[in-house]
Image (cartoon, rainbow, N blue to C red; front, side, top):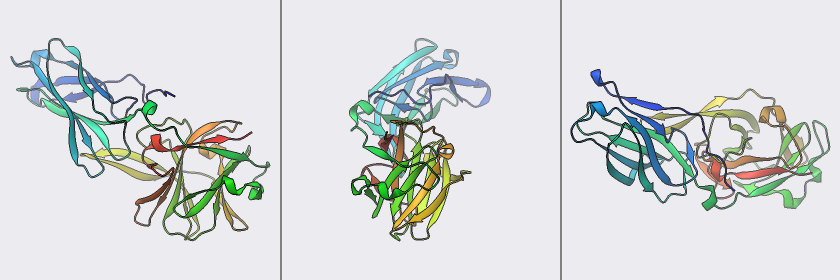
Length: 307
């Protein structure tokens, strides 16, 4: 199923030159932090042709930057500039998904122009039509109340991540994350994407429930994101919340009020959820499904609230 492109606001990214030359080029697309739904790179820009030399050309390249800032040129072309506004097609880059801590950047240069080079970044790709369908987990309906009986959950409701079994339940008050007790090191992360946007980059709107089994610790966080040079970084930020935990036999029950999740509960409601395990050094060690990436929501599973 096709989903709309994230970040649809009309805007223009202006990259300015030094000195008296002023603005040389302004990009209309792709936009920073956008998630493209295909791997075709087309740059749309407005160029101040009065500042170009006799050789009126622009060189463009699409570069893949991975999580170690290693760069691979995926496409490169030089275009003649015949008008102040144009579309420059670099073609397909043969990447169905790029995101998380990796991204595509567009490098540009205009020969002979002062300040005539720069980059547009980051750009993500999640070609949903060519990716495997998301794993879908059905969330069992529990009795109403702040502490419903989770023994109604069956063995078939449980999955495993990082050596810990987990399941979900819901009622009109909250989403319940049920964990089988096991004092594993590190943290379990449950990242909620209420809009189920399947985007290429974790965003501040995604709400993350973090539980440390060894220390029995529970907290909620957001992650901000920014570019530091060529490094795409995410920084943990506090999320004011009313998350609580309780014990039911050999189970730990994490209660996430719907107001904290930013969702209204309803039968057959669907939303995205990233389920991952991290070690004490902050490295992802396991995920459900297996290839999910905490920082790349397009790889997360879907949760559906049962009737």
